[in-house]
Amino acid sequence: MLASQLHSTELANWVSQELDGYKSEEELPDYRIVHTGCLGAWTNGAWLVKNRGVPISRITNDKLKEFLTKFRVAHGIRTVEQHAVTTDSQFAVPQISLLG
Image: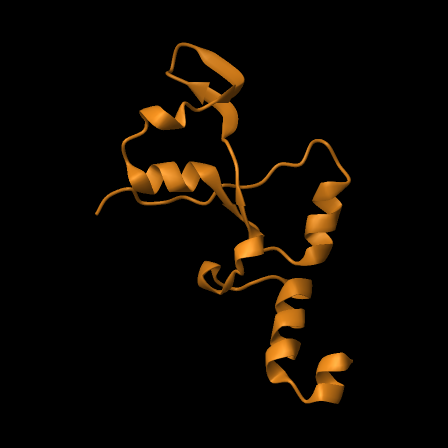
């Protein structure tokens, strides 16, 4: 409503993206990039370890290190709120290319 009264397309676009989600990671504001550690289930084919952190200091590939330590929250705020009230939230991790 405020964006309409101010005739601000910039404010209207921001509100729309916050409510409905961001289409691309390049549009994400800094406050939507969470710096975190990485926990998960890891296997070497013979052993399975759950809820263990990755020793980030041992990773030499900068692209992989950034991928594991920065969580980009592109979902709309309603989805974020739903994840905030549950303790068993799971997020799909997109596939990345570490080559090149």
